[in-house]
Length: 379
Image (cartoon, rainbow, N blue to C red; front, side, top):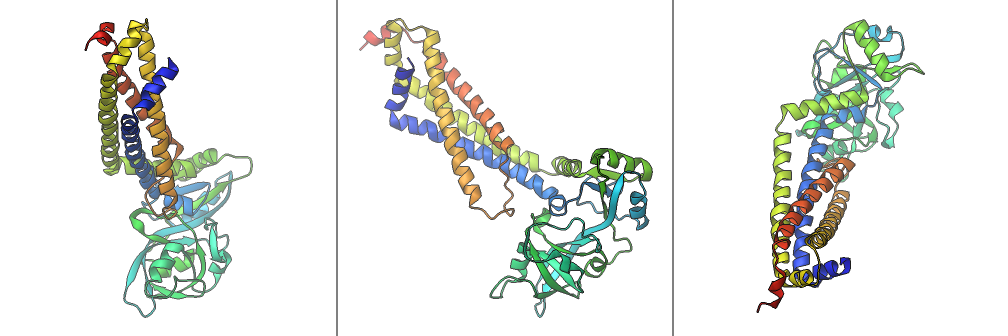
């Protein structure tokens, strides 16, 4: 019966192609929506991926990494004094304006100030130059997006040795790095903590975060808990801070509604197109199914044939849809488009396609059980 079911499915090529297309299009819509959801969420914690540290200490009111509530300078020493802390350094992140010398055009950037002694939290994907040169006078590291934006109108993007301005202060590029784009599209500029006071907007307290690490043999979770008990500040591990930042965006933005709408439309397309087309496919094969019934095939066997046909359509359409979407994502600039194709996306879409298959199968089975064997003898 398996061969018969597949021959019936493949025999009508136009209907088979239409069924595959419906599931494929539905898969692309749902996967694209979920990938956008995870991609936008990843922008919410981009700073945590561009500046890595096991523990992030912040003001008790901070719920996500982009909420820059200034800390006291003495808070760094308080964190260092907590048992189990291997090291702790000040960290600054804030907004600034960058401008090419001699040009009136400015571009927003996310300014990051690193501890000059350790450069803890410095990006590791260096394209050109050396991060150690940040200690040089007026030295900054820029990401590739800043290099391209500030290089507009030039023959090439900014590179090592080029100069631009931030807050009317001269900045010399000593390194170009790869980073992940953050919220609002502002690219990253890295410098030392003390120099960030000159390049950033003036404020009395410049420490927005304290980066720390546990001593060997201790977990980041246990040391973070010790820091909170001893200082009254809030301490996150890197992973917990990512989760807190993404949770904040989910609860305080329209992203879930927009993504839910996209995924819902994709699911409805799959149900309507695949379900209706599959039902029509069963109708057109009513006489053949009636002949099988007349030869002794039970409703259960015909139902299994219908489920097999729907499963082949669903798996094929899902595979083609995910393959096309993966190829499209690979062609996009790395880290710039708000799309992140995680395994969770593939799993969720597969579950949705399975549900579409179930609905389409039920519509077909309902028709199959009503077929009378005598139909094969009617003109």
